[in-house]
Image (cartoon, rainbow, N blue to C red; front, side):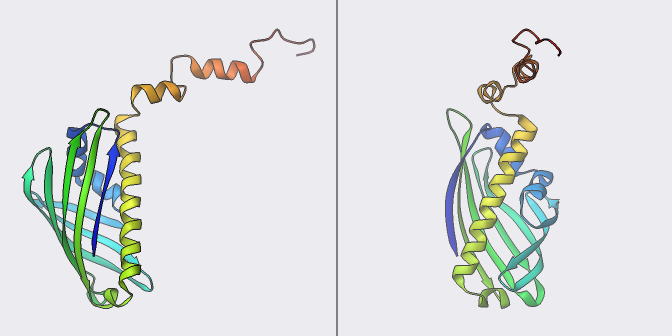
Length: 183
């Protein structure tokens, strides 16, 4: 399986780099992740629940970072074993490029699977992989917004200016007009 893509992130390159190397962030963002722990410099142990069609299993795996060029890029090598369900292994090249507003995260993944999981068909495997990638990025964006907040322009547009909530409530309650008799 080969998959590639790019996403615009609303955070800076260094913030994205730090988050992509933080096991706590990764545990939150990787779909089905039960645990991820650092086992050494650029090495992690991972337990991940994956379901592809009728085949579901917990995969125990290892991730090792290579070709690290902080905060620009690295190659993430991975392998996992799900017992009778099968195995998966491969690599992903991850690149962070600064942009005017935030940074772009680009990735290219090459992976192979074997065992029962490989028997469900390549189209189904590709669909699950794309769905997991989309879910990861959605969760990653949400976690980065939670940690770093929206850019200042977006915060103002969302009504997070000082007193904005009070003004909105006043309009809802009719505070801009004189009170009617009997109120």
